[in-house]
Length: 497
Image 1 (tube, one colour):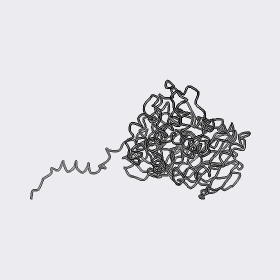
Image 2 (cartoon, one colour; image 1 turned 180 degrees about the horizontal axis):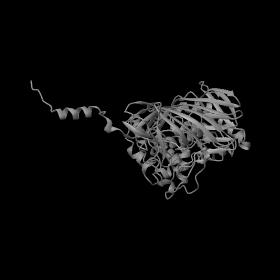
Image 3 (tube, one colour; image 1 turned 90 degrees about the vertical axis):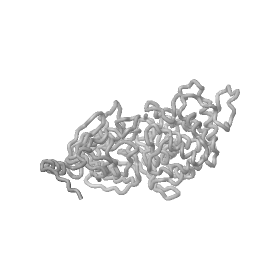
Image 4 (spheres, helix red, strand yellow; image 1 turned 135 degrees about the horizontal axis):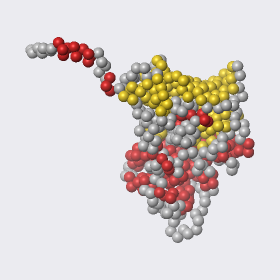
């Protein structure tokens, strides 16, 4: 046995080293973005949120919002500092009970330095106290907060949370939610999920909402105003809550005639996509001047303009299809937007078949024939459109064409097996266009790389899909418009971006 002799000076140095945590050098700030190339500053690195508890007070007359947000999270690195995405005025931040220093950074970042560094794998509680007037805040030259005559609404894509709660704002970080909102008596507060309770005191009413399944931040919504609220259940027993602004005027009847069919549409969609994945359902129409609708989880947002020309069940089909394609399975990155929009558009085509107003193939033929080869429509690549074209009409319509081409290639049995199996495979998680292609190949037993490349990634008009309902050859006349097309086209302004 050999004994090693250590000099006294070396022992002293070793004692000093032992007094310093071995991992101290590894602590570093979390990234100010989650890594999405379309939106480099959206989301944040270094942690993952599991739950948001939002306790809010809102004054409709002045658009003033006060709030305390409690975030439950876990660190994914040795963390010295981290960011939240947020715009309102912050008065205090606590991390694990201790006051933390904070500062605004960039266009929409709240930079937080905890009193003590946070080791990787640590459970963290972050409390943020804040206030402000959401409609007075802009980032990158725009706002996602809708000021209405009787209140305000947070609903937009790909960002809306910044205006009403601090968050890790990217679909990769889903969480559950409790949203409690205090509003003056006579006003109502609408949010996602189930209405747990309401209580009134001293001229104010508190509304408590709960989303108990993972939900992306842009899918969280808040609307305060004067609403007429209706309730019901689907045939499968899921509670339905719909809300209509009391100031919709001429659009009121058409909005109700559409949205009151939400339960029927959800039950119908479940035949294609599998069981409805949440314990709540509904929709709401605030008195806002914008034109789009949005798939806010369990309770889609609809602008009154969606019903300006009469009932529009097709837009309800679109937003409810997103509850599976976009909400249950969310994008891995914003370049994967086809997984959301192409499928929601195709659901509208299937509804057209259901209503005997034109088959999916007839609609595909119409879209294909309506755009000549030199139309810029074909230069947008639905599989990776770029942030400037993320919500271009081609992502919707060319995206649905890609699905019809897939259906023709692999046959109905395999195609509808894919449509139903995909949401179950990635339920409550995230997936990409590449993941979908792999899954479709597994189900069909076919190589589909050429088909996906042609329809999703080439900036040119593809050759006509197989099994066309009508021949292109010699078709000089304008294509015949299916009966449902005007209703489907009315949803072309479905998103703001």
